[in-house]
Image (tube, rainbow, N blue to C red):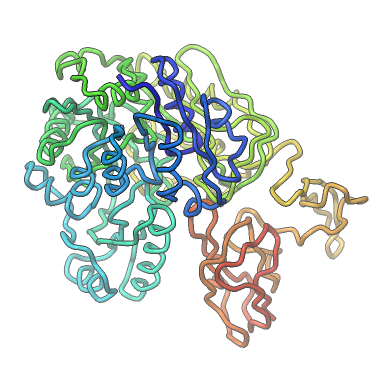
Length: 582
């Protein structure tokens, strides 16, 4: 059994691994960036080592800094979590060559299954049907255009070495290809350190169903449960449930068997997830995630299996503790997991909402669990993923689980930043969700969130030392109640305040204003206009990256661009004027 584990990650997943390791009597080592010096995972670990830097590239993706921490700590195992290096074969190989156990699959399996193109080939070897798409990387816009013209639009451009919807862009027509391709590659590079992409047909109304499996080094592989992850926005999951509901008899078992065959085809061991697209009673292999998934706890609550414990035992050379038949007998009831993300869901926009959590009250009660990476007083930075934590609920059946999840979300309090909770409640209360008639496109195309308004609550301080203040103003004789960020030392409610922005839109500034302001803090990755250019309402003026997501900032007024105040690479704050239109 391993004696000391270094967790090469941060936030909620680092906390999750630390807790199981401590229960197993295993010492834990945290690593941290400058921004995470006092983060929860650092506070919980037995020891911690600085990586330096602020961004992911400067810290958690700094291979040599992490390898140095492994050497200094004497760790004999490394858990990569998810994201960052979790699906990086070079990192896994470097760990293995040090004589340290990588708590994940063999590097060879990561290469074949972590690359979404070669994983499609492996799925075919295992007998799983695949969605029509390329089986080689695409490098030009023409290849994508040719594919769309042959197989039909829309098509999905996807990061070959990613997951979780990062680096994925849906293209409706040929004229959108180049811009979408560039954006997909930028996001993929920022989040996964690689920018290879491929393309596949985008199905019209699919469900996203995945299979959790675990294998050992002795050739045993079992599938633990299915999960439905169809409630998504921007191809990133909001709510997951296990087992996947509403499947015809035999389909779940067929998916499980196909997943196991695909895993065995590449000699897979440790935890992994095979993802399928399901439509019209047919399922297609989508990809395999060669790591632990964010949504793994929803499988745990219906089986009583600690998947992190199984990961550690497999990495230590032990055999799986259960057979397929024993795993199936463990399943009981229904589980729902809700991701609590730092996003503003007002009007269904889901804009990133970094900031400091001033109050955090998590729900409790029968069948209720919360996995978090932050406590009150902690800051959710623009430089990292926006997951605050996960609410996981068990019920004796699906209806009970839904009702219990709603109750728990109603109890939860997060102040200081926006979260996705209001949208989560709207999903759970909708009859389409209850009837399992939703799809991966349902949130964005059917669910009406136009009247949804999110508030941060309380008083919060952001990274620039500003505090939120409320006041009343009049514009052309009309009264408005507004909130704004001002310096904490300001003598009045509007002293040195930035121009208020509309948090519900990808645009900045007041309606019809010529000043285009940043709706959140972030980094400029593309400027799409220049001085003297004519723009129409809705035209993109800049692309702003926040929390690893690209956001198109658009004009709310037609006219001529008279000022461009930013360039690529600039860091901006909420309310900063990016472009002026007259």
